[in-house]
Amino acid sequence: MPAKSKNVAREWFNTIFYGALIAIVFRSFLLEPFNIPSGSMIPTLHVGDHIFVEKWAYGYSRYSFPFGSWKMWNGRFWADEPEIGDVIVFRNPINESQDYVKRLIGKPGDTVQMKEGRLYINGEMVVRENPRPYVVATLPKSMRSVGYYKDNMSIKGNKIWIDNNPAPFNYTIEYKSDKFCHMYNGACGVFTGTEYTEILPNGVKHSIVEFGDDAHFDNTELFTVPENHYFFMGDNRDNSGDSRGDVRFVPRDNVLGRVWFIWYSHNYYAPMLSVWSWGNKMRWDRFGMGIN
Image (tube, rainbow, N blue to C red):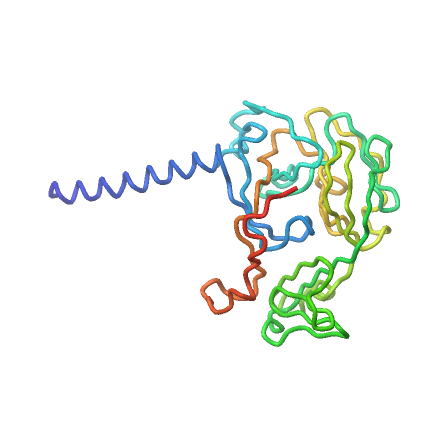
């Protein structure tokens, strides 16, 4: 091979190799992007939100790195403890191919229980106040151009209107394929719940959504969080797979990092290349939003 061709090939190899190395180091030690595929953290996170996670917040375990599933070591280094109320991404201990995002509710030694829809931590009922309506609209994509209309409510793109005025309550809108809506009867529609402000024992305030106080996980056993484990729950209390169910207690090593902010958000209204649809697709008000 001529010297010039060898130099070009070497330059290409170096560019690809060092680019990949920088990306791996950046994702492993600094920030890692994730997208939100489910509504378990509504109203804090919406389906279609893209987030950055601080990898340095709680130190590093083998799960912090691309080769974490190789089980090369256990434990954390440069470790720091999370606080109750932190929104955290962790590796599902039941299925290590899945990453979950939930809110930390219990630390080692804490007791957690749900009774008639109310959260109890260490035997004390957690305060929830300021009830207000919250709407979750999951609509088939066939409605994205014609809109949804019922009674005095209309939905089009990213907006809900009541009597031709902007809705006076919070909401989230997501568009699914028509096939999905037909296949999973009852998964698509417009659902009205109640948004509350929850105040955790350490003073952290955040919003939750309840669709009732008699759902499957609204009455649970008394959980005692074991050493080196955590207890997580979704803010969409009646529609979250979390530590109340199969996920159970999450090992300390499985924690990946704290959610920092939303850098991009959309509602699946149309393909990204459909620039003319961005007004109805992009949730501009969520770009750069910090997470509480």
